[in-house]
Image (cartoon, rainbow, N blue to C red; front, side, top):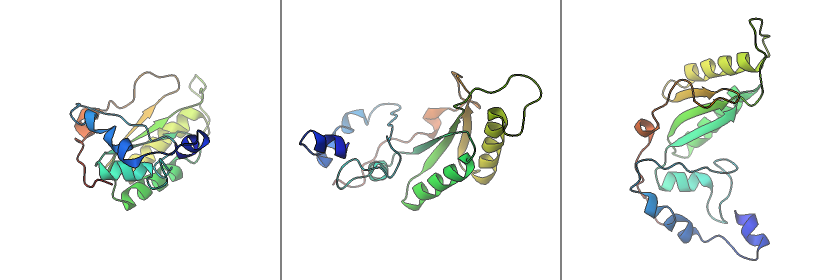
Length: 158
C-alpha cells in the first residue's frame, strides 16, 4: 500500500487506516488479509503485524502445502509470536493437482500436504492446523472460525 500510494503522489494515513477498522468491531467475525505477509509495510510507520497486534487480531497463517512448508510455517509462527501476536490457525493450501490412485509417490502433492499438516500439528499443538485440498471447497478438519476469533480491542492509538 505504501508504494502504491507513493506512485499516486500520496501516502498512507495511519490514523485513517486504523479508523477504517472501527466500524467492523461489532461484527461477529472479521477476516483481514495481510497482503504480502505479516511484516509487509502498510505505511511508513506500520506493518501488517503492528495492526494485528494493536487490535489484538488473532492471526491465521496460510501457506502452500509444498516442499518447504513446514520450515516456512514454523518460521512465520515463531516470528508472529515473537512480536506478541496470537496465531490461532495454520491453513496449508494444496496448490497443485495430485495424482489419483493408490500408488502415490513420496513427493506427490497429497503426501506432502498430509505429512506437512501432521508434522505441524505435532510441533504446534496449541494451534489449529488444517488443510485445503486442491480445488476443494472446504477446509479439513472443519474449523469453527468464530471459536478461535477474538473481538477487536484497541491497545494503543497511533
